[in-house]
Length: 251
Length: 159
Image (spheres, rainbow over the protein chains, first blue to last red):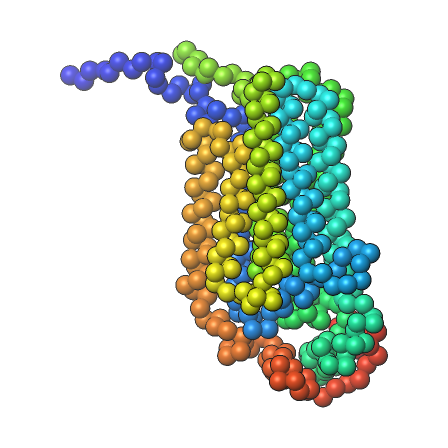
């Protein structure tokens, strides 16, 4: 004779308890970030692979990223250091906005989100300037000097004429660049471009939420979780930059 | 059935008062200063590396990647609050990612060995490598030179 077992309804899971103790929206933001992080992880691993394959002819970052606004001397790493500082700074203002939201402090959220958006916009602008210099290459006076020792000579296969030609190359595009193997510029464009797209969309989303904060939407709702959700996305963007910074500029 | 959920509104669970907020802010600023210090140390080391001959050494790579992981952990644990979530959620997020990334890196390290080094096996751009070697020796870049004006070289589309 089978006998039933008494189950304490306080202990049993009856569908009413969330084991994660987070709201649906926040959990889904985390799951999205996982998938996005896997995309970036895959890109960076493939970058490492190609860089290893061409390690002998891979350009050194301190020879490529040497520009700084208004200064004509070549300073390696300084500009990217500034960009990193801006992004970390905007990350800390974002987390302060989230913290202010937990106290239902509308003014605090407004101020800190404003600075986050400013920081994000500055970062996107900095990246545009970085791309501008990367694409145009070294300035003309330097190049003329460099041409003497053939520092910018590149030999490549011309698809139109079918010949192998050697020419002086300025800057970079997807086919050829003055710095090193074509893959160097390809990966630079793709990974920093993909990251820059994330920063740009993050600024746009932050701005939309900022408008909602101003309208008082979250005061009515009784919580500022939307700020926390865009905060997660924004910190993820910062997180990716930490890795891009290391693998593209430091190593 | 009885509804056992003690927190019907998870969104409001993290709301807190001013006293708690003060403590939270202090922690966040401390994390920020630590991250800034790590970044500055990285930049100084990166700045000194070429002249000291540290560039490309294994020690430098391990140091930079280690510091990067420390910074990443700080962002995830404090800025993204994953340290404050329940353990079950924390590992649901972290475990798949760490397992998949370790697997990807493992695959590259074991299955990617066919690539070898560019000098020996690269078939993609032998002319380029030949030329780089010639440049290292201080000679003329390989191949015949088609003289083109220095200002007007944008790859092949102009040719």
